[in-house]
Image (cartoon, rainbow, N blue to C red; front, top):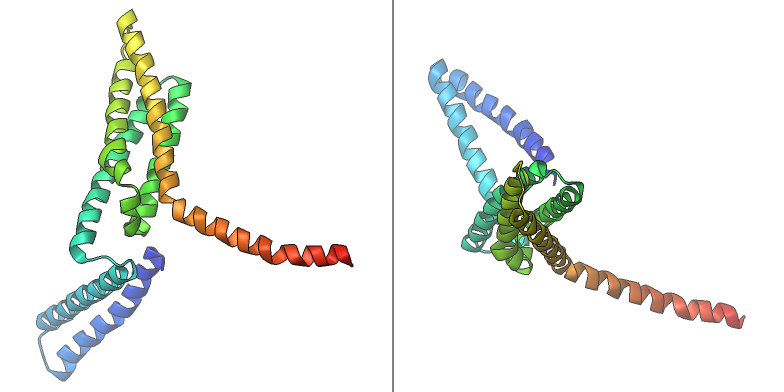
Length: 212
């Protein structure tokens, strides 16, 4: 379910329960106003913890993950999110159009890998090279390139370094595209299989039609 809708439904359920607890405490058990509020808030907190724990357990069960395993993956995802923000910041500092477009596309692909993995954490293992190596490398290169390209005076040595860095960034961008393809490989194989089944099913009918 959409997280926003889950949030709305959760509060639609929690609010009346909290009010009910307050009413029971205040009128039925003759508690003070302050104590009734405390009981209602304590009840809301316990319900929040229970619902959150239940949703997390269902999520882990759905994706066949243990709590420690998911904690480890989530830690890497949080770090990747910060690195992608750094990459986007470096992208805004790049001035030449070619590098600008290239970095923009790399940011888009990186965010796509992150989003897919966040939604389906098990896919983290298909993108380990992206999270452990490729993302770090391209962020570091992009930041250094953005800094050096912003310098007003560029001598021959700096111009050569910038050219070599652009080449390295281009190569890394292609590598990250391959990372995305690897993450999607199972889906692509599954789709190809379904297409083969459809073609196999339709082919005899077409052949029968030609015979008629």
